[in-house]
Figure 1 (cartoon, rainbow, N blue to C red):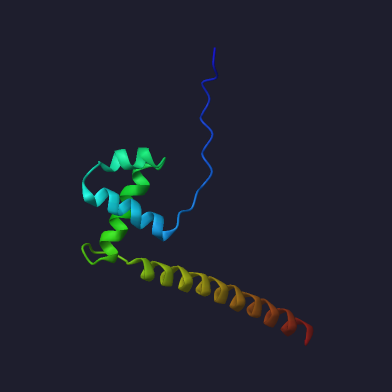
Figure 2: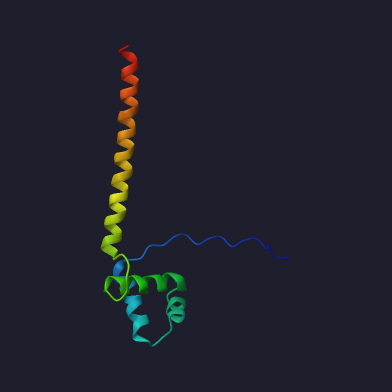
Length: 102
């Protein structure tokens, strides 16, 4: 009897913006359904639908954050996290040196 265990998750893949744009264009033409395009290119239907949604947002057809706004937000969050860590280090250093001077 075959094992009834879980399937191994597929490794995470990354795709170029050009590839995503090509897939979105194939779906918009209407020759094939989103599911069929996803199947033909070995993609998940969910990922293709997200790419289509993001393309519509970038084109101003839908509300939401554009790709450039998402990138900027992620960069600002990284910088904010780094600055908070810097402040915490300085706070601890101040407390440490305040003890030594007494």
